[in-house]
Image 1 (tube, one colour):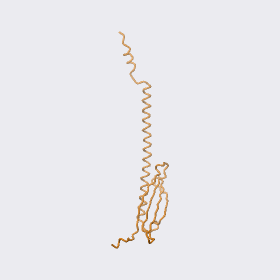
Image 2: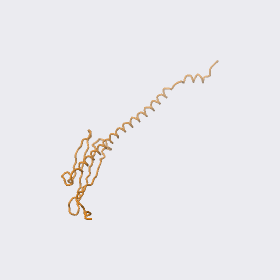
Image 3: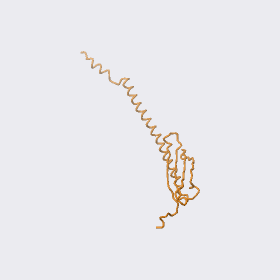
Length: 147
């Protein structure tokens, strides 16, 4: 007996064709490249957050050093100072600004301290400075002390 042609055709199509395999490989390649680019993106931003964290640590250290200094000492004089700091092989610019305010008698009673640390990185989004602001007053008693 003769077999119908439909059964003979089904016997010859047992696997994937070269075209189907190529399309599947292209799709897998696109997905893999997308994942690799996300990995590079995440690694870059993770390094940037480490720089920002280090900049915050530098700013806090500077602010603590200024808290230990007496109110009328030379280090607490009004003005702006800039210095370059290296921390774990990364470079930062540390800017300290001290503004002195005075009361009617002309003596300084309040100092506003601003510490700003800027990472010197090549990426623009990493160059956002960390800024800490603090107020410090003298030990003089005010007019409320008489009550």
